[in-house]
Amino acid sequence: MKVKRIYLQLLIIAGVLVTVFFISRMRIHGEYVSLSGFTQGTTYHITYESKNGKNIQASVDSLLADFDMSLSIYKPSSIISRFNRNEPGTKTDSKFRTVFKKSFEVYKNTDGAFDITVGPIVNALGFGNKDTLDVDSKIIDSLLMYVGMEKVQLSADSLVKQNPNVTLDVNALAQGFSVDVVVAFLEGMKIRNYLVEIGGEVRARGHNENNQIWRIGIDRPVEGNFLPGENLQAIIMLDNHSLATSGNYRKYYEKNGIKYVHTINPKTGYPVVSNLLSATVVAGDCMTADAYATALMVFGVERSVQFLNQQNFLDAYLIFSDAKGKFQVYSTPGMKKYITN
Image 1 (cartoon, rainbow, N blue to C red):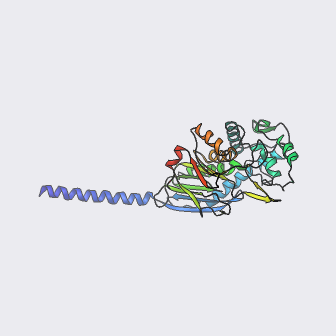
Image 2: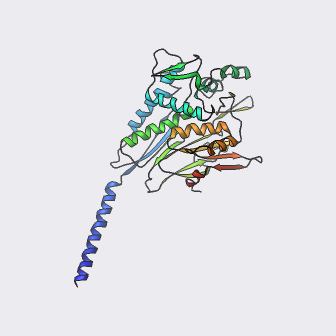
Image 3: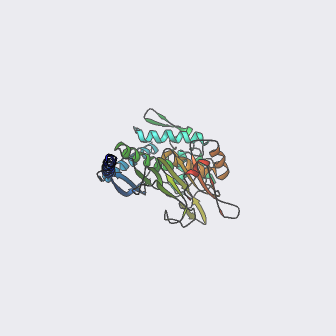
């Protein structure tokens, strides 16, 4: 009888503990809030868990507007635009300095395959903020004189150019960095479950509202696949990492029967011609992933594989076409743990 009484008491205690546990879980588990909007000529989507369901749309929009005033070449009054115009007295801010230092780091690591001073050629070919020029080899050769990050440097909070015609275009890593900026804001608010996507560049941490690790689709790089998520090549599980994809199957235009893709080789000044269709990079921060995804597209398949095998801070997923025009895939050993199909 005494044993039964003790057993009954234990069951009651266990039941109370389970009830307390679930009540605690209900109190801890918050509401998932989704935001969307426009920035940097593209869209953003953010989903995060909030204990009180707080909507931070206004704060995010203000943060991204401030970001544009530093690094957008499409804003005439931005810091980068004023530097490109050689406006006297222009000073950098912390965001500009962060992007410049990362750009120089990737420039050195890739032997110049990534270069933000390629701006004059980007504009000449119609991918910048100016009208397309009738480009020939003479124009390209003349513009190459102003390309190379050794031609510009930071001095305290100023930018020093060897030639006033040197201009910067940070679009190859700015979207990735904007993801990092928003993530830092969420982390500062003690938000630990979130997904931030800006222009296809992504950072995810924790779990979604179904208590699952966030899943990110890699689009199949076929022409006409203009709707992200409609035709997927693979699905990536992402937790506390960033992902960026670069490809030439969406960003291009045709003129006089010639297709111009947006990835420019800084060494030649011409759009990249390669069987590498897209490069997806996973890294610790989104700015790094974004920059190296661009560099891999410049490298092409063989050099990208060689580069990836010589470093240990990136994982990558490359989609390319073989001699018969069929899709093939190369992924680093570390990338395989992220892929779910």
